[in-house]
Image 1 (cartoon, rainbow, N blue to C red):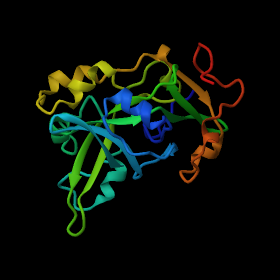
Image 2: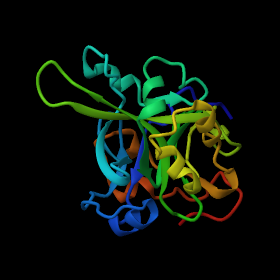
Image 3: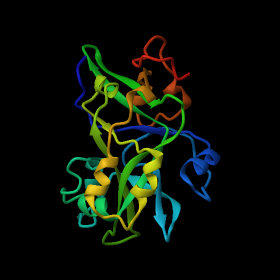
Image 4: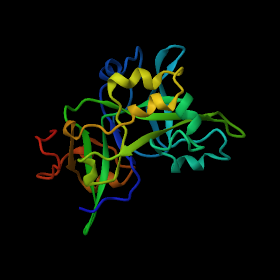
Length: 239
């Protein structure tokens, strides 16, 4: 199978009820969030960070805008950051040490290159539970107007399941590592890099979905409906 050269990770979902998100991510309060089936770059995403010692929900623009950027257009090119080099890259190194966040999700899409075109697949945890991408965030102040808070998703080498589609995959943090990742007093990259590992492939499921997800304007439950007989993973289907 051909490995895609498309950007990773470029679309994801967050359709988990608010009450379940609060319990999963240690939040005392969370506004009612719209169910999202096709979150795309530059759109708002749900993040969690630590503010004055407690976890707080914060909506942010997907696509990190460095504080030194001349305009926000650069953010559309910085929706992902390679975990292996994030401590050195000028756009990310300060955020890696001082502004880390959880980006909430419950699935994401990947496209497989084939002779008949790019075929979309939906990927999620096998148990259907929500998870957190490892994220970095920044606050950018434009010449006029309100500051913009934005974020990026860290990526790592693909596990054996995701390698069917791409050489990279988003970093899905182990819940046991959330506190350390969010700890603002931890600034040593050597303590953070071990958290940025591949998620176990046996805990994931992937299946082919219809082409409607290709358009960011489409956002409905139909987008994650599996096409019959198209599962890639070895265990039973998610639905």
